[in-house]
Length: 412
Ligand SMILES: Cc1ncc(COP(=O)(O)O)c(C=O)c1O
View 1 (spheres, rainbow, N blue to C red):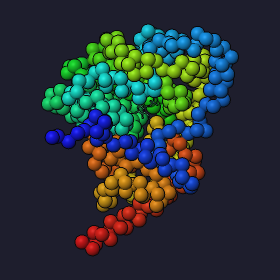
View 2: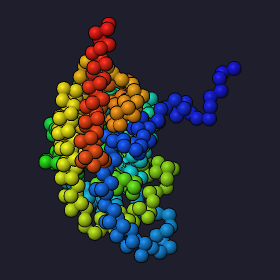
View 3: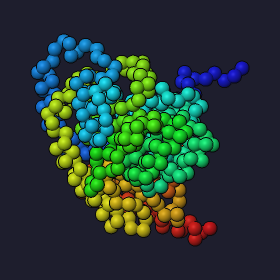
View 4: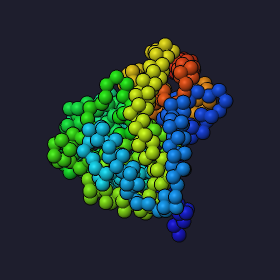
């Protein structure tokens, strides 16, 4: 008799939960500094703007607003979201955009509708873990494209496209999670060329593009593709989580019509439509015309926080971490020296508890899950003073690790 499988499909039974979520469970501990979460700064979330819009919506609520709505999203929010995309240089009409429950849902639905189990999805060496999870749950086989400080190395991509024939390529070209990398224009153009040539559908995930500090990133893949007459298939998604508030759980997808049709079918099966009260609230927020000034406030505020962590790491972790100054987004991707031992994720949790500073080890973002000489440090959530304190504690802890490694090497 074969061993009975449990109630869960093996794909889920064998999957590990997000190590970042496990870290976040520790973040609330007394005195802990967390550089682990990629969450926005609560002080920068627009509570007043949201409250005013909520009250406006509450004052106008009628039975018809409480009815089921269209799977594609509230027409007024599709219109307002198309306008947001047009501001970013994309050609978009209301009927071209879909409203999703966060951009996470767009990734998940695209994975379901584009990838047959066993087919390949090409991804960067280091990725947002929940995207990897969505592709895995869709049965995809992940194809790693080498990544450097400028994102995906598109010159190495062609050989992979020939050898592995992935159906889909997922990429975060702007201030990627976790690397913070921005893909230069030349790479974007080459990627589009290859995607068209090899018939690979691009999923362009852009939650951070508006959070630039000094210079806006190059045009999106979707925009460049439109300008070239749309030779490639590009599904572009963005999120209101980082530029308005994650609590709304709203994202936007701009995809070719046949892909959008598949996503609508999958969304009918997933959640019918995203919450109408959230959609009404966001519609009222956007109608107030305050998004642009909110972004004008957010950019220097996050730039200042990035600067604080960058400076503090240079002061306290000199020689122990190598990293670039952040140019946008929410992350510093820091490399540990080769003399340092590669620690397991659990060891980094223990390190966090011992030193009162949480960081996410590179393993959490890698395809194999193997230990990596990288740490993701987020400057978005803690206050400036906590960022300084976090860097100081990290420096102290890393020095201790380095000393232990030297001692162990001497004893061998
Ligand atoms: C690269 C990337 N994509 C997508 C998301 C999901 O965002 P949301 O579902 O809140 O829109 C995140 C969140 O951190 C992210 O970092």
